[in-house]
Length: 224
Ligand code: PMT
Image (tube, rainbow, N blue to C red; front, side, top):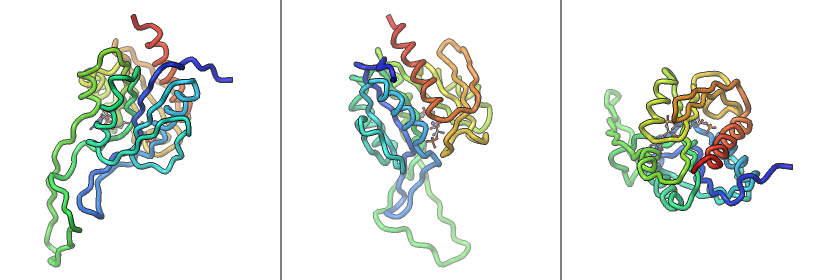
């Protein structure tokens, strides 16, 4: 029997990719499947937490006990988090929000040009950084971030931890086999806000979720 050690706690989890439309038929996105975030939501809800799962497009069935909020763009995800942030105890940012969006979205399909040498040049502008935005507003909330990197994992993870005011960060090297996007397993390093670093072996995402939720529970219990 699972101990309901998180009952009375409200946890917001973001999961999956966002998309940024270019025209009615095309969009920019990334390889996130939502598996990591959904595993965290499942773990938290099974331990009695009230869970709001803010999710980009995935093909995973969410646990029925969670409040599911479906979003498309990074801006939508920010607005959805904003509705719950003040009243939550924990925000876990496991989603992969798209960082840049096309400056303009064409209302009609962009036509392929006739001339072979023609180029299609798209100007991208920066999306808001959701984690950094809420990191500035953080009061009592415990905030957990992720860092998806292809190189210099520890360095970038530590920078993100500080910049975004996370309590701890879960870093994954998305180029490693058995880690990162779409697979059922992950290989993570957790760095806390005192700079203490722990490396974990390859585990399935539900086991990684348990490690994360245990750490969150410990921080909640030891907050003054
Ligand atoms: O979904 P899966 O297929 O299971 O894959 C899991 C995963 C690789 C997506 C997950 O483990 C992961 O690493 N998620 C974070 C992906 C990401 O966007 O990382 P980042 O290093 O670009 O961003 C760092 C942090 O800032 C993240 O907590 C991210 O949610 C947040 N962020 C990023 C961009 C943005 N505009 N707003 C944000 O809040």
